[in-house]
Structure formats: structure tokens, C-alpha cells
View (cartoon, one colour):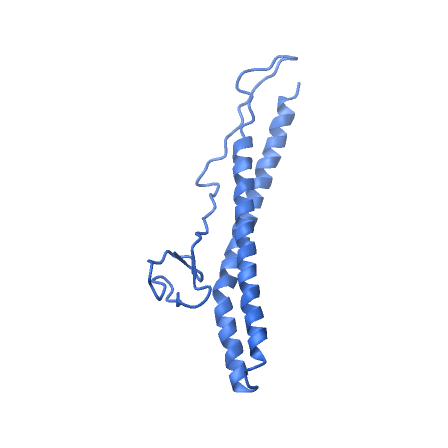
Length: 160
């Protein structure tokens, strides 16, 4: 299990996150899905295309696209992170919906303000998670764009 606030692993049966101290027994306090950290350019070196001289009509061995596999991996990672982002948005929406449905039964004044602060506190973890996912998606999309540009340059060099 993983904490919904910070994403740290939590042992089964734990009531509070050992990393951030958030309660794990509230609805949405525990998630069973791990949000993977994307691979950065430092972790996986980008393959450098071989410099080749092509003869007219002759195809040399080794002219296979060096960017294709990493581009495919990045696209899959981005899709997966976008699904996690949708889940975070749905979790936030259900928390807000629960607040609006039940807030009409809370008396006005200080109690309603306290109730709103409690709702804001419950949304803090999912909001931070959403921001982290958006940053990861943006980084991967920037890396993907760079690889696609390098791939296009490589393809132009491969043409006779």
C-alpha cells in the first residue's frame, strides 16, 4: 500500500504514513497503486546515431533507427502518467462532491469554515500528487520532443 498524500510505501494495517504522518484510515488515505518515477535523460543515455555515408541505392547495415525504442518507451510512460493524473483528478472531484453534498447540513459560521478547512486539508495530498504528475509528464514530453527532433535530423541524414 502507498500513502495517497506523499506516495511513500505503507505497511499493511498502518494507521499513519511513516514518511509524512498523514492518516491512512480516512477514505482515499491509502492507494494500492505506485506512481512510478519517470526515467530521466541522466538515467538512460540517449543513443547517438551513427555517422554513416550512404551510397545511392545502397543500404548499409546498422542504419536502424536508434531513437525508435526510447520514443516508444516515453510515449507509454506519458500515457501511464496521464492515467494516474486522471485518477488523482477523480479523487479530488469525489472529495469536493462529498463536501458540497454534506456542507448544507453543517451550520453556518465557524463550523462551516472548519468544515471547509478540513476539506482543503483532505485535498492537499491529492493536489500535490497532481502537481508532481503534471511535472513528470511535462519533463517526459520535453524529452520526447527532443528525441523526435533528433530522429527527424537522423532520418534526413539517412536519405540518399
